[in-house]
Image (cartoon, rainbow, N blue to C red):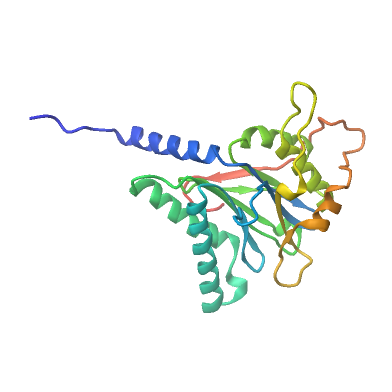
Length: 261
């Protein structure tokens, strides 16, 4: 009688994690960055029909990388969760923290019990009355949650692009400065011949959570509005070169239990 095939739990979890990471790495990166008037979202996305950045509720937005059908199902579930909670209680009771907790439970359950994990990484962001009250949560395929401050980069080149953002992002940037910076970062480093790639504005998907808007803070930027914003020259800190860094840059608090800190 043959012995049953055995795979240790550690190896099973490692294989699941590797599988999910490979799927996420195939997606184009998304950058979420705070600016003086709210939170900006941007990604290279030539498609006008499939969105990777979407509104969830009044002052909450969603961004994702990975398999479109999987994160689209999560987006729809998030909209239903927010609508039901706002209807049952009060609109002010719907916040990014509660939504992040709900997503963490779903992602964690699928990762441990289903035949394959979800190949997605998502950000849930909420704009507050001031920048100190902004909330940005990053959720991984296994349900772990990171409370981000300043900016977050997801996707296949997250580490490389995150380093570039760390060197150049600083608090208090205008919307135009942030969008110019993000486009340059998404384009990647210059080629060996010195030619830097430039992403056309038509190939960018850009949206913001604008804290000055009275109720629905989410709006998409495209056409002439986006062209005008991208025409602004990026500013740098006084006395700093292109490689300047902000010593008080963004910080991350990670909670692998699935509950935002």
